[in-house]
Amino acid sequence: MRIIKLKIKKTMNIYIQRCSKLIIAATMLLLTSCVHHPDVPTTSKESNVLPAIFPDYCNVTVPYNIAPLNFMLSAEVYGECVARFTLPDGAQQTYGNGVKVQISEAEWHAMLEASKGKSIKVEVWGKKAGEWQSFSPFEIRVAEEPIDEYVSYRLIDPTYVAWSYMEIAQRNVTSFEESQIFNNEITSNNREIGQCVNCHSYQNYKTDNMLFHVRLSNSGTVIVNDGEISRVNLKRDYTISSGVYPSWHPTEKFIAFSTDLTRQAFHTSNSNKIEVYDLESDLILYDIATDSVHVVSNDPELLEVYPSWSPDGKYLYYCKSVPLPEEMRDKDIRTTYQKVQYNLYRKSFEAASLTFGEEELVYDAASKDKSVTLPRVSPDGKYILFAQGQYGCFHIRHSDGDIVCLPIGDQLPLDARSEGDPSPFVDLTNLNSEGFADSYPTWSSNGSWIMCSSRRGDGNFSRLYYSYFKDGKVEKAFMLPQEDPEQNVFRLKCYNRPEFMIEPVGISVEEFSKVFDR
Image 1 (cartoon, one colour):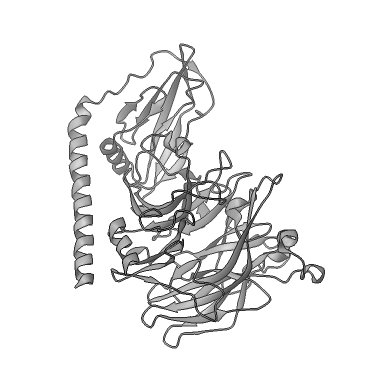
Image 2 (cartoon, rainbow, N blue to C red):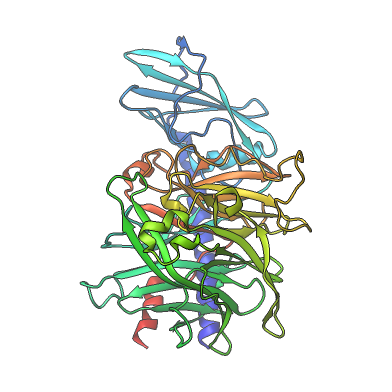
């Protein structure tokens, strides 16, 4: 009965949300007749450069269902901004309010629909010291492929020293609607210890089967199985810890985890500031139906972490460290951390018998003096994304961290080639930033969009960026749009572990909290 009630409630919540969107859209249409659209300046000084808008949406490719790409000019330089949008059929609309360009949602979605598969021309004028300046026009290309309507992320402070408030949130990327999935205050019973919530995960982009971890106070892994909520202790006598970084099997009720003994160190002069590393780590498989934990790999000498299923469920990909040089093996990891490097491996999987095959090397990063983390296979099974840096397993804190993409072929390791052969790597220059950490790569459910968490801009706060992916080519990355373009400056939180979803989580924070009373 509880499952049926939850499904009904979830359906009703989604229905209400969709009805609300229709009502809002209808209201917006009624109000647009009285929205002020400023005139384009009659005279201006020409400038042959692109406008320095924030966020940078110049010449990006976006899905046809994304929220308005609101932007602004610097208030320290300009007093006003006007932007004119020209559609493929010649229709035009202008926007501007101070130095900000904030577009009506209804009008924006109408513009995207009319421009699907084509481009919108954008012209920008800025008023500086009483004189209007015109910039070189740019395009917003509108792809024919949509993006998943929802994304979830953990909102945390830009430090791991301590925390006071933390939440897992979900955002409708077709609008600006954001809501909580869970927070660390509602069930914490010891304020001195505190509570950490992290590592939310879904089965096949849907939310009927999902999980997240609660650490320290009231600890446990909260699992939603066909809408039924439970809290599970995944620690067993033969495992290092409870489950950590999770990955749902795409079709079965199995979840792969690593089990880790994780530590942190803090630098005083290194620009990376924080090191997160494992003293021990293994791989396990959790069978929800039997509440049983099976060891996948537990090499006593090496570290194994970040499991990730292939979309057909036939392979489990993961990262595994390589042996340290002999002279370093007995030393404190705080002195050897820069020599800890991970390669990418996989094992075949037989669901009926719960058995794994032999370990296969997929990508030998260490031979290139690199380290791999967070692998994700594309929905069509043709490509694999991962984060890469020079060392370690936590590249979101390393300024050299980048996203890498490789085609998955029959030959392993994937980068094996003869001298003179062209590089197999997909060029992700348009996705990665220069000198800032890029990490947590993931694919949309249709494989057309790549999302990552990046510290570009200020080096402190990680925010969400998207790139269009088609036929092995990646377009310029763009930031998750906000209703107020300054929101990404004033919101002093990091977007952590972003995950695509094709539907929202229909269970409320209060409903999740009840599992801690059982």
